[in-house]
Length: 204
Image (cartoon, rainbow, N blue to C red; front, side):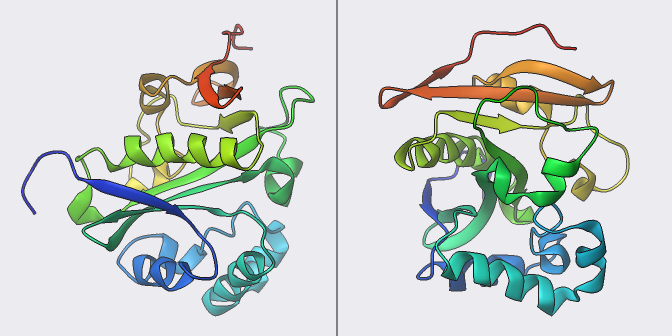
């Protein structure tokens, strides 16, 4: 794979694209064991479920028509994933003390960004975030919210699975809260068929 900007297409995860999600998650990396169920289950249930159980749980959500996210493709190959769905479909997020709701605004939450290693650093994350906003707009949502790290965490790349603040700010998201020194809450407001920045609110 040569360096440069990937030509990426993005599609929502549905029954028809589920095999592509399976193929992506079969690669090396953290999705192959968590199946993006960390925020979608209670902590006790997550620990109780084996990898196959987490996969089956995500499949049930997809089969039932509940939004779970979007996939990025390069030359027809699935190369990236963004988990984006209504916040209320993430039970663990709803119960989080650290990431409690900023206000009563209905939001769609971005909880995971993943790009397969050979395709990183080529613009796939930016394309995924743009597509996530477009997807939320198509579904009738008005606010996209995310919970990125303020700075790159030490250790494994998987530690930054919720993204970095600098990435979201570059894509037009605005910080609306700072629940801890290392964690931010950012938003992008979508209105009248077009995405636009939310007016900034001082972090707390």
